[in-house]
Image (cartoon, rainbow, N blue to C red):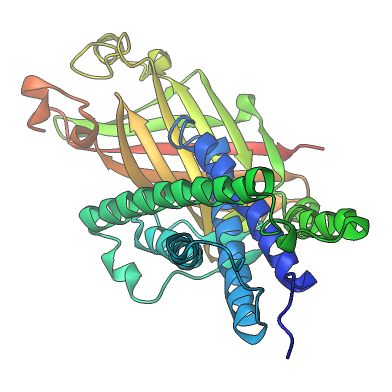
Length: 378
């Protein structure tokens, strides 16, 4: 069998498809890590990062299988031995990282205590790695996996720069055919590049219309965001008069939804002047230092019937905690009503300092409550 002078069209398509996907992963990763933690945009980018990462894993498995069944062209005969060895080693490590990085990222998601579902491109539910769910209660393991993912990611980026630099050196300085072997023939360049681009860009976009969670406008006049507690054994309740909510939810795909609620802590009121004067003070909400609280739901989980859970984070007084908010949801066409209650320990967020931190006078157990009426946005 004669030795091929170029990579075949399938190998070329795999190569450029992988290149485009990796560029997308790097771009998404750089943007999402700079966004405010827990923001709805960051959540959407994390879902895209996971989706493209699993795509890279699948394409790489196919690419390796194709490579094993189809002989690639040899390196130039005049290439020094050390350079040929370095080229082979770099390719081997790149292939390994294209498999290990997505798998390791999959492990990070699987070990996360948030248990946020992975829904590829907003359509296909993707399971966690078997066995890692039992580790989700161990923050040190999740932190170690995240650190390893960062290290592997930067190592891959460094090797990728070396790979591209070497290819350009061969093409522009040595003027051999190393790079041209991976390029489609001139009359087919546009066809192959467009095919690769369509595979990585248009395919994820096809389901976007049906996968996009419906957005809901909250009727503030008929909605309440409140809290409950106890003082001296007697219960009390209050609410916030100023807050904003962004909600995206599709009952057919709860895992693809998200929400963000920002609360003006200066607007807390109980109807009791003594409590209302105390709440803004440094011992309690400390509104001068922390004027806002935030709840971000990264995903929703159905629990049967009209019961759901919102998986996300709650930030009060600058303290961010993972939470799961149970709620009920009743839908009537384009109208929705949701009610929920989230039990909390106020000291987990530093609410109640000094003598107030013992629970002797004011109970430690409190709850955030919601009663929302919303209309589906057109």
